[in-house]
Length: 375
Ligand SMILES: Cc1cc2nc3c(=O)[nH]c(=O)nc-3n(C[C@H](O)[C@H](O)[C@H](O)COP(=O)(O)OP(=O)(O)OC[C@H]3O[C@@H](n4cnc5c(N)ncnc54)[C@H](O)[C@@H]3O)c2cc1C
Image (cartoon, rainbow, N blue to C red):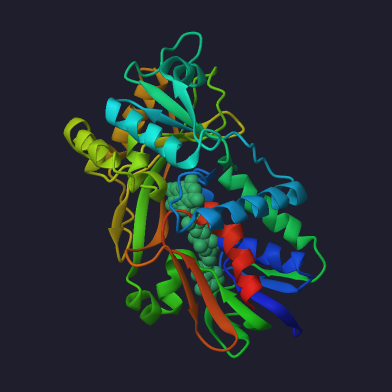
């Protein structure tokens, strides 16, 4: 173990921990990062890499916009793929089209660029494919962007490792933190400030905090598929189920009808609390998801019928009979019905930062700026 006292010790090398480490470096601070695994394998590499800026409600929109700036600065420094592709939101019935129009009224035509059915389908289609005939309209959210979750977190960690004053402690589990010390199986790691960013495993270190804030686990099923060769859209593609999930649209009066229509027409998706969406990776493969199941513990057993419903939905939108699955996995994130962001002070030197909704990629760099502004 290194004997020196770092300005900051970050526990957890997911996107929340790493964005805090990047912010620490930006502010000229030394930082040690303690990660129990040999590389990041948590929620931060298992997601869509969709920076969902536009669809945030009033509570999170400003934070998401600050985060966007932090992401762009990090992309320039660390050299990872971050196309400013916008997101494509599909409307497949009148109720969903009404939500897009109402959202455009509220946010303005620059933030929510409405598309005709033909324009929407053109973004999805190819020479031999005809995308979902039910598409009646669409919208582009230009402020949204993408990263490739798997390579991004690795690229940030690599960049950090080259910076003066940064030390990684991989394969080193934090067993507890107090008074400027992170106790690990390899000995103590000391810092003036300790930031615990362990995602859904907050309850392993701070069970009482997790219980007080009703933090549980949300388990999501995902698949990686071979895309139709002519599918080139880098932005995330979102559907009516997404309108019910993100605060900016879910709170609109017209969203109630979307829910009623989905309940009637797509009970198979509503039963699994689906956010049916997909996103292309830079190698051309496509991430398809996702379902939401909540509990204190995430069962390791995936239900194939859940993944099949998501794959069928994505294939229908893309206008192909089926999608060749290359990989399946589950992701888990922290979830709380009481708050989207849980900040807790454990003693004068130790605090934790946990995103308790499925927005950690979007918000991480904004949270990191907030954390250091408040120190
Ligand atoms: C399937 C899926 C899709 C998603 N899609 C999106 C999306 O498109 N956009 C978006 O904004 N968000 C999305 N999210 C949410 C986002 O991925 C998470 O909110 C975010 O990755 C959480 O980051 P984190 O760093 O807190 O957690 P994690 O990435 O889980 O990292 C926590 C790290 O802490 C380490 N750790 C835990 N305990 C210890 C310990 N005791 N000692 C040392 N290390 C420890 C773990 O090994 C892990 O590396 C999605 C999530 C999932 C699962």
